[in-house]
Image 1 (cartoon, rainbow, N blue to C red):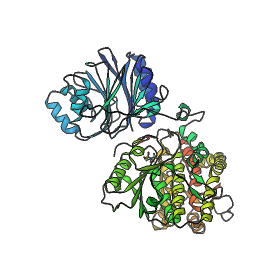
Image 2 (cartoon, protein in one colour):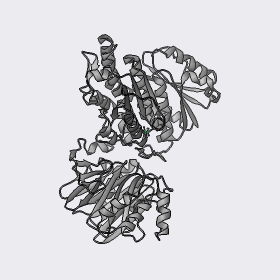
Image 3 (cartoon, rainbow, N blue to C red):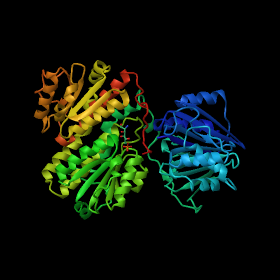
Image 4 (spheres, protein in one colour):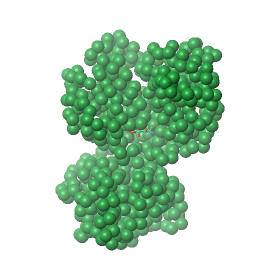
Length: 608
Ligand code: M6R
C-alpha cells in the first residue's frame, strides 16, 4: 500500500527512482512523484494515475541530481490527484517528504501549522510532516525529523530530503516497512526489496522506531533519541526473474501457472512420507510445547482468512484441537479469550497487513504463542512472531492472491499433520495424507492444462451482473475465495455461500441470468451438494460445476463442468481453487479490466 524508493550515490537518481517505482506499482497506483536534489536545488515532479503519467511529466521537464526520493500512492486522505501526489513540500519548499501510513493527529497539526503561517497545498495528512520539519529545523535534517516525529501520532514509513542539507536522505519507520539497500558506493531506500533488487541484494531491514541517515559515504541507523543502533545486512535470495512477467500477459496468470512449483516448494524437505508427518524447522516449539496447546486461534484478512477457514477444519479434523478463525480487524478490538496455552496462527502473504499485525501483537500481549504463516521473508510479521512457516511461494505481484493461497493451505496441512501425528492420528492415515499431498504438484499441472476450457466458460458469462459461488465442507471457503477472486478483478458482484444456506435467502436471486459456480469434488458431502445443484437447475440458474474426474453422477445435470483430479477431502480446496482463479482471470480479461492492478486495491494493506 503505497511504495517508497530513495537513491543517493554517483548516478543520476531519476532513472533509478522511476524503475524502482515501476517495481512497486502493485503496492499502489493512483498517483506518483519524485523529488530530486541537485546541489541546493530541490525540485519535484508528480502525476495522477499510473507511473507512465509521471514519466510524461519528467520527459517534458527534465530533473537532474544524484539524491532523490519517490513514491507511488494508494490514496487515504484526499482523492488521487496530482495535487495530492507525494512528495509534499514545506511552505518554504526546502523540505520534501514521501510517506506511507496514516498520521492520525494530522487535523490538529494542520490547524496549528496554519496558525503559524504555513500554507497547505494538498488534502493529505502527509503534508503536515513537511511543514512540521520546516518549523522545527535548527541544525540538521535528522534532528528536525526527530523533533517532528515526536509530535506525530500514527503509522509511517517516511523519507525526507532538504535543500538545507542536500547530501542526505533521512528516513524513519513506525508501522510501515522500510529497508536500506547497500550498494557499492551507493545507497538505496525502499519500502519493498523488489524496488532495488536490480541494484543490490544486500539490505538492512529497519524496525519500528528506527531512523536512518543515508549519505553518499554510508548509512547510520539510530533511534528517536539519536542513539546509534546496529542492524545487520541481510541478503535477498530471490532474483529479478521472480518479479518479472516472464512471457506471461499478466503477473496473475504467471502466478497461477507457477503453482505446481510453489506448492512443491512449500512442501520441500518438510513432508515425511514414511512417518506420515511433517518437519517444520521454524516453529520454535518443542514436542511438549506443541502437545500443551489447548486451542488454536487463526487470524488473517481477505484470501488469507479463507485459507484460515480451511486450516481450522484440518486442525480440528486430524489433530482434534479446538480451533477458531477470526478476521484480524475484528479480533484486534475484541476481548478474546486467550490463554498461555492458546496458539495464535497469523496468516499473511505480505507479512505487513496492518490488521493482521495488530491482531498478532494483541494475541502476544494476552500471552498467546504466535505462529506466522508468511510469504515475504523479513516482513514485520515474520520478524515479530514467535515462530513460523514460510510459504516459499516467491514474490506475488498480482494484487489478486493466487499462489500464496495454495501455499498457505499446504502449510496449514503440514502443520495439522504434525499436530495430528503427535496426538491421535495413526501412521497409516498420516501416510495417506502425506502421499496425497505429494501428488498435488502433478495434479495442479493437469488442471492448468484445462485453461482453454475455462476461458470458454468465461467468455459465455463475462457479461453477467452477478455470480453465486457455493460449496460445502472444505469447499465452502473455496467458494468464498472464488467469489472474492472474481469480484476484485472483474468488478462483477459475486457472493460465496455454504451451498445449503442458499435456500435460506440467496435462492431468491436464482433465475436464468444467474451463473452459479458449485465447488463440488467427490468428497464426504458430495451427495448433499448434488441436491443443491438440482435446486438451482429447477429455477433455471446456470450451473458451472467443479467436480472430480471420476464422478459420473452429474452427467446431464449441469451446464458446464470442470474436472479436477481426485484427492482426499482436506486437499480438495487446493485443487478446486485453480479453476476458480482461472475463471476469475479470464472473465476479468474479457471485460477489459486491469487484471494485475484492479481499481481501488493495492497489494498490501498497511493501513487499518
Ligand atoms: O498480505 P495478506 O495475505 O495479509 O493480505 C490479505 C488481503 O489483503 C489479501 O488477501 C487480499 O484480500 C487480496 N487482494 C485477495 O486476492
